[in-house]
Length: 112
Length: 114
Image (cartoon, rainbow over all chains, first blue to last red; front, side, top):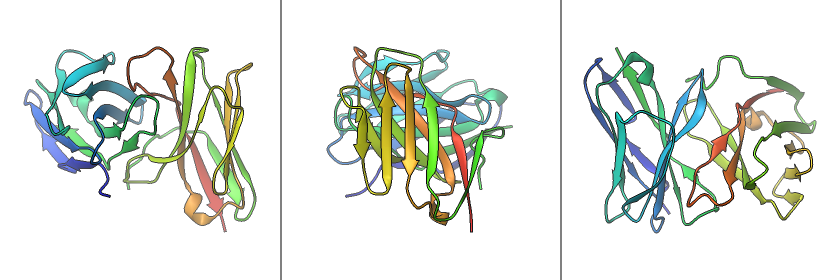
């Protein structure tokens, strides 16, 4: 069974640009969550999607958005990139509420 | 490799010894807890979970203990091996939250000495 797949693995963008990251969950999983990981703030929850609906949202500005498709694949978008958005962005998939969340390898975003 | 935390507490342990990693959580409404292991350049890897109606759960070489009275979680690794060197995170999910919204601890770096 394939794990959670995130693309791309690495990305370099310039301040002010926007970026879209992709996540394919484990087959059969309908919940996809996104997290930002930085050395200073650790792992922070961005949002969660379930059956194409945003079910939970963290405390991030509106520049961070996401969506989920009918096949459960998810994308997150960050607009007007800032240097502080440089981070490892992780996607996790779960079968249902309060079950194991399995993470992908992450996308390393560097904003210059 | 990628650093997941520049100032993480570090636990140095001799190969073959047992390791104990501690985690305090703050929300008494949390009802589901997970331990993750993260190696350099990789995403967090699920180790073991426990629900709030339990106080102990065992896996292969790992045991998680939950003390709800003092809001404390621990992960015990038996016979620590070099491959156990990584950063370990505890995470909690809040009861009543619709869906999955894990809150993570700051992490503990485990270094296994040969």
